[in-house]
Image (cartoon, rainbow, N blue to C red):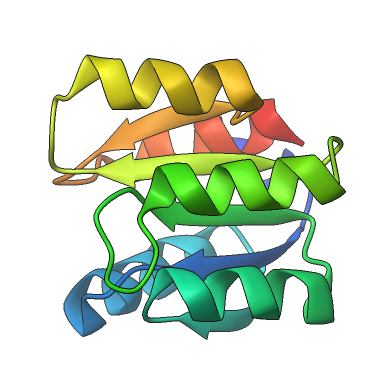
Length: 126
């Protein structure tokens, strides 16, 4: 039995404007036996799909078109304070990250990704 065998299999939504990042996350999530229920390529689409699909967890890029990650976190948490959101970012803008965490996001994962860290953050957030 590996550490991946004991991970809760979650229905996860990915919101990132980069096709390449969504593909990498898909690969990582499949290792953890998670299900990707939908993907969004901008913040507006992320909010809409989140409420349509009700995933167990949202992996959310901070820098996206139409609505940035901070706005997405605000809108989702206002309507669903129990929502599970993990931020993903290549930026080290602690001010924005801290605002998102204060609003209720669970944690933040930095790009480039470390597979074990991503899977651990998901497990810890569920």
